[in-house]
Length: 292
Length: 307
Image 1: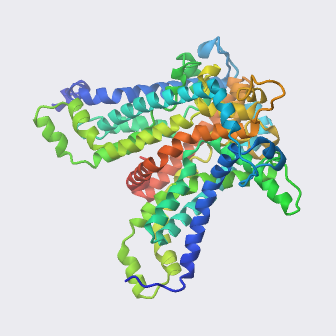
Image 2: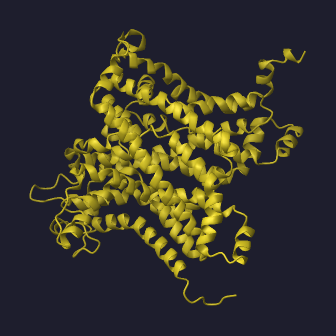
Image 3: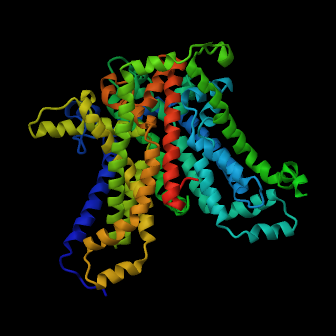
């Protein structure tokens, strides 16, 4: 079977094309990393380059010497992501169980209740006023609760998965005297691990990458998540002083490379977890597209 | 006679089920349904201190103000135009990637390439904006360095209005095409393999198989996803545009969309009523479009509809 085909030219083009696009996807990240370890004076003279004349870890050193800002926002981001994701997955999965339970008579109405919110959004201003009235401003909850803690699309994803499980599971548990709480937590949720992994990642990523809640609801610098610190550093000059300062005046901080070092530090967790987790995303998308 | 077993009976019989769904219902009630009444502030001169009931009613003045301004045409056009570009180029790129991937036999290559292409999807637009700065920055950017090294003049990209729709499209495709191709690839994988085998027996070449089998059978999936995206055409991608453009007013003529405009009206200009008027207009038109798109999808592709 394994004959060497001589000139399958189209196949060569296909492989090259795909490899080229893949390389293109990686390139900006590689550039960012290289810049972050480039010597600042070389950077100022030659601009950004994939092959700098001289390397330097100065940017990371300043970052860690001024770890209070980055360190604190790291803690904020991790706290928000962990708590938010746990809460979101719990709420979503519990609701999905009920929507997938054929014994529930008002299932249709409940589906509609959630579906309407996917069709019609009140928009930014009413949302903002509600958050203000609930006191969701300038505290950790403001980063966790609004917008991110429930997503109807994820719920329907889990519901579809649960509907594909055999109904006899539920019925036989009822006969054994179990109520819906027991059926949900003991039988259904453990069986849903694949789809739960997917929505966990969806939620976690949304939390980790979020800066919208911060820009809308948080003014206190101590509560800035990482992404928002990055946004601030880029958008206004005075925040630049956040990164490297307190040094003597003669000392010019490696501003350009430090910016990129901050980026690298921010995407660090994603880069490390990505190889292990990406299959759940693919799997989840496929589940969602089969019936969705 | 069964009538007597009404909703109370149902609620108590399935009490645990209703209990399980309660948190989600409350969440949606607070952050969706309870926000709807506040759309009325579009007809007011709203003050936070006086609230919804205490603020002065001024009829359609906020709408008049918006539609008389030169901003209206600009942001409505930008929103729709950018979304059309995103949908068009995004779909073509994703379908093309999926079709190409389907031709790849080497599993390791396929896995590696796919993993790499999905990666940008995991980055926030803030991160992407930094990477773009590395490419487009006037003084340090790689692109300008390349231009000067071949003897061309460097371009000040961050003031070059007409280039930005295309830069944004490029970044959108860069970030999302790999991810979106997964859905199409899943649809291709579902195609009956005997079709390709019989085509091969009839002497069809690779291109003919793609044209006559893969693409026609992929058409419903493409149509469904495109329709659903068209339904969202009135919603700008705030996360993307504001992260990349920010408050760079020079670029507003080609990049300012409804969502960034509403954001500025609310948070920077501090005029909630004006912002709400634009937001209400967007919500209503957006609703009609999403509803229509879903209705069409449901009519022609039964299983593709959102609901």
